[in-house]
Image (tube, rainbow, N blue to C red; front, side, top):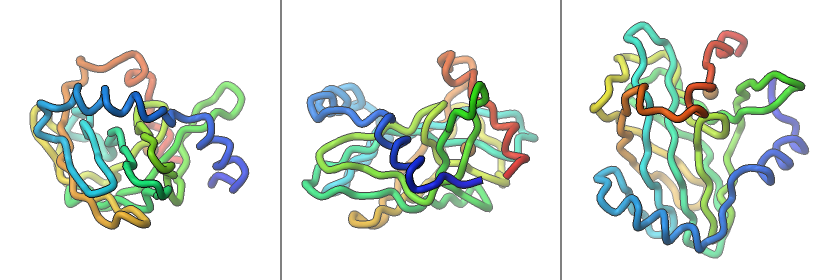
Length: 177
Ligand SMILES: [Cu+2]
């Protein structure tokens, strides 16, 4: 199933598009993170994933993306050598059920930040070639419509460091794709 254009638009409006003053705080908080990545207009902060059992076929990557330009941009694709397929996903509510859907792009408004997080937008890593082990890292290349390609290094966190929101994330529904 795919989002209709209208649904996708409404969805984007309700997601975490923060005001720029929050951005400064985020930069400070992640200043010691070696995973912080720089680009002229796009800044990707604290990319992370969660460790999974070795048999898990799929994983997800999360991060905060800041657009420092006056032009809106869009994340249009992602690629990682750790997975056969990398997709951009969103969560939508259908009645009581929350499910993941593939989206064509994630809008990053001008001078704003968008957080990919459990229960929201995420980058889906499908058909993992090796396990996601806590303390290790995985490479990820993001492609933006205007900023082009941005390479990031994703830190893999242990599962027991997760928030309740993370624990609610259920990837079993991937079988429906
Ligand atoms: Cu997903």
